[in-house]
Length: 204
Image (tube, rainbow, N blue to C red; front, side):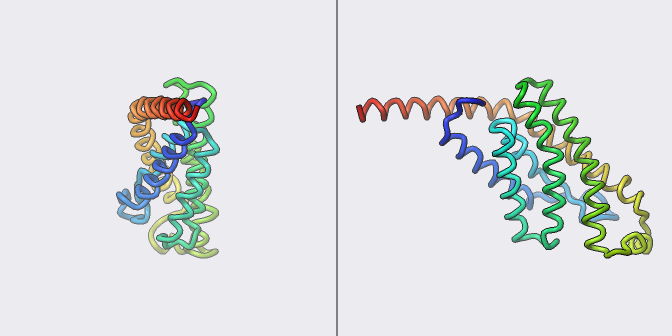
């Protein structure tokens, strides 16, 4: 949305960031009984909406703030937030960049499709090389086998479908809401421009 009123943009970005922080805690829906720590949330939805509206820079700032705040109430010692940051970049950046180049429904859908695929890959890699070694130690494969899980079974039978479901649901909600929010944003920008014009005349 080129030519946006700066005040409207900053207000919208702050609201979307605050909403992402709230949604990173509520709701957290467990999706796998054998891995109860895999919990679905919708924190990527407002961030995706922000990326569509304001571009990749504002998106990255909001994503960093969201994960930084989540560290305060987290229990993973920043490791979970680091993995979430990696997964978030993989999912959110493709649709943001693609949509900035061509603002069409097709571009948004294509970007979200690519982002969903990259999110699955990033989730597998971050679990394999960051989360599992941190939580279960260097012998994490043996620990998992003792819990009745194989490494590949966990990565491809739990992590991959979990990230797929999370990506699809966040994409669907963002896609449904974006056009409505863009109309509201445009109206807010027009009102802000009118107010600025009135103030300019009064000063003149």
